[in-house]
Structures are given as structure tokens and as C-alpha cells.
Length: 516
Length: 119
View (cartoon, rainbow over the protein chains, first blue to last red):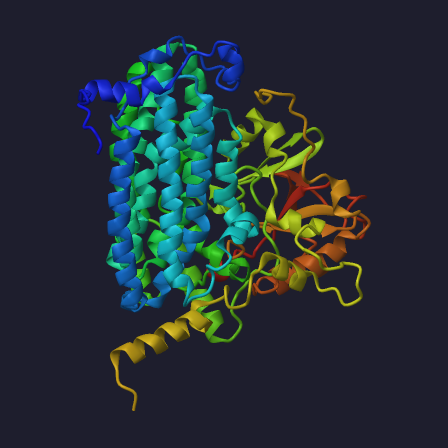
């Protein structure tokens, strides 16, 4: 028989200290600089790591408990969704393409974020930020997993999702989000946390989550909505951490200000360029729309982030100058992006369509300054070409920006009919950019961006042929590239011609009516 | 500026001309014809006549636009990387002074896209 031992219970504060800061130790047979070799080369000066204020009071044992509870709820709903053929309750089959964009474009970024936070959770010499980064690393892993699990319910029935990991690595349009995160992950720990923890998770997070998660709720996607809500309390923690890191750097040494400002300028722009995909999704891909990109920008950037930057002004931080251009592009961004995806549809792994008359009326109401003048005539002309049986499609790969990797689709800000051209030479080679801002990012670290793998160039170098023999007599380069990319004809093209559209109608019909 | 790194940082560019097996990359866009969402990209032999670029790859990319057949190459104006440029259509790309990854933009006076809307 066990003898009961009376244990002294720890107070909350004591327990917290022991379970976080108490987990660190002073090395004795190695110097601290050798143990943490990566947290000083970027030039950020930290004099007192103990001045770090933990932005949330969470210990590992409590963390497991909360997350396990959330998982139980999430998987109960996902199971119910799958067993009840939840995919047939969607507003419209076009919505599924939003899910494809999410699994291919965003879920792999959660995993990248997991890796990035695991890395910096090792590299910061302060115990407080290390513990916080470790928890965020686990959150991000959980988000990637739950997203993959939730969306696997769609993958059983629809195209374009089965190869999401391979497509994220190789498909040209997915190089935009992928290169964004690789750029951050290949920076030092302070740049990474500024890029992801602050610029992406704090400044831009609502512009990502509201369209996708509210979009899911509006369009009957219980699965995506649930993982969104399950991630929400984590996101709140991530935002607090991002902001705390910025304040910590700025309070520790005045020399940190120009470095932090440079990163904010860079990562606000990099983030907004990635959000081109979200803007397009919001305005064109949701059958039942939540709000326009322009409205989301006004609320979540101009109002919320305007207040944030005013708050940071006391440290000397100013609004990134690129925001002026984002404002000028606000009423053009989603339209230009959809025009690009429509014509490059042979290399997408989701389907596209021309907006209906009703869609276009919504767009002209939301974009009275631009839609009818510039974009409605384009869609009407292309609709005529579709009707005539000669749909417009680009047969040639586009020029891409060396930094954000988006095709150079952007016009001169304020002059929507003139294409912006920005280029420079480095080491005798010419490089092209979508904008002055991407060019400035390149010129700050050209040695990094000359290594970019751009889709068209990789194709032309023969890097997308897999095991096929380019010297064989019957070699078909496009067929070899499609095989290597694992892109099937069912994955791409027009929604109206797709197997997804046909199956959705068939299955929904069977679910709602009796067979004759 | 140069990169700040914690170790020697020496990597070659990913897109040097020698990586394209003798070809050079050329980008071409058509001003005031926004139907084409961006300039396009081709690997071309440097000894290809400029006229063959117009009649071959460019025609293939741009001929879906009804303005293409009306384009008058004797009045068309060009820029290269944003600077004025006057190609000789009978000479090769190399003899026209084109370099790897040059970006050309051409304007066809009098042709202003569908309905004159720059599209």
C-alpha cells in the first residue's frame, strides 16, 4: 500500500516561474556566445534579456491541456462533417477552389512557420522568448495538421489537392507564398520573428483569416470554419508575441530602430504582395462573399494597423512608405490577379471562371472607381471569346518579379493602363521587378535573391522534366513538365468544364432528389 | 548593400545565360494591350533574326488579339529595359545588342486595344 505523501502546493506565480524561466541554465563549460551563435550577427543589440516581459502566462502543462480540449472538439465536428457528406451543403461547387488555394498555398506555410519558430526557439538566448517561440512552433504544427485533416475530406472527392506538398514546392504560382516564407526563414532569428511574428501575424493576419474563415462560414464549409476557430486563440497569442518582440528590440537599444524599420518596410510589402492571392479569392472565388478586399483593407489595415503604427511612433517607427502604393493599387489588385489566373489557367491546380453578370454588378458596386472602366470590358470580351469557342488563354510563361515572384502584372501606380517596368543589373546580370519596393529589397541583399527559382526559367533550363529524356526523338517538353509537376488536366482549366463541377451537381442532385 | 550573414555567403545566380544551353532569355510585352497580363518570356538563340522573334514566338503569344494583324512594324516603337530601342528586324538578336534577360516593350501607334480601352 502506498503511503500518501503530503506535497506542498506551489503558488501560481512560483509555479509559472519554475515552469518557464526556471527551465533555463547558465552554461559552464561553453561560452554563452558559442551556445547561442545566431542571435547577434544581424546587428540587433540586446543588453538585458531578463527585461523581456512574457506576453502571456502559459506553462507547458496548461498548454497541453487547452490544446487537447480544442482538438477533441475540432475532430468531433470534422467527423460529423465527413459522415454527413458536409461537402454537399456548400453554397456552390466554385467554393471548393478556395479550399484548394488554402491547402496548396497556406497550410504548407503553417508547417514552415512551425520549423521557423522551432529554430528561433533554440537560437534566442533569453529563456522567456525561447519558451514562447517553442509554444508557437507547436501551435503552427497543430494548425498544419488540422488543416490537412479538415481538407482531406474534400480531397476524397475533388481534384487539385492530392499533391499539395509537391505543388507547393514546384507549381509556379505557389512559388509566391513559398518564396515569401523561405525568405523569412533564411534570415536571422530577429528578422524571422519580425517578418512572421509581427508583419504577418500581427499586421496582416486579419486580412488572411477573415476572408478564409468567414468565407468558409458564409459558404457552408463547417470543416474549414472549425479549424479557423480552433486556431483563433493561438493566433491571439502569436500576435501578442510578435508585438512584444518589436517593443523589446526597440526598448533595448536605439541602434535597433533603423534595422527594425527596414524589416517592417520589407515585410509589410512582402506580405501584401502574398495577399494578392487572398484579395483575388475574396472578390472572385467566394460564391457568397463576406466583404471586398478594399473594405477589408480599410478596416484591418487602415483602421487597426493605423492605430498600431501610431502606437509605435513613440519608438520612432513610421508607417512603411510602400503603403502609399498599396492604397493606389487597392481597387485594382484582385481584378488584375484574376485576369492573370484566368489566362494562365493551364498551370493552376484550381479552376477559374469569368464573373457572371451578377458577380460583376457586385464588383462594380464595391469598386465604383475602377471596375466598370477597366475590368468589366475585359471580362465581357473574354466571355464573348468563350461563347465563340475560342477562349483566350496565354500559351507562354510570364515574366516574373525576382523578389515576390508574381508575374509582372502590375501597372504604374495611378496609371492603370501602363505596365510598371523596374529592373537593375547585379554582377553583370539583369533582374526584373514588379515594383520599386521589390527592387529595393533586392538591392539590399542581391546575393540572396539572385538564387530565386522562377517558374518560367526553371522550365526553360530543363529542370522540370523529371526523369524524361529531353534528347529522345518523341520528347514532348510540355507533357514532361506536366508529368513532373503532377498536374493533371482535371486539376486545371475552366470550372464549367471541370470534373469537380459535374460531380458536385450529380452528387448534390442525388442527395436532394429521388432517382426516377 | 550587401547581405549580412553569419558565415561566408557566396552563391551564384540561378539564371546565368550558360544555364540555358546556348539560349538567352528575352521578355516581350505589348504596351496598351492589357489583355496580356504581363510580358512573356522565351529562351531564344542569340543568332535568331529579330524578325523571326516577331513572326514566331511573339505572333504565337499575341495573335489572339485582333490588333495583331494590323500591327505596322515600320511605325512600331520599342523600349528595352525602359530605354528607347530601335531594332533592325533583319539582324540577329545579338547584333541588335540584346543581352540575356532584356525586357522589350513595343507600342503600335494607332492601335489602342479593344474599343480603344488599352486592353
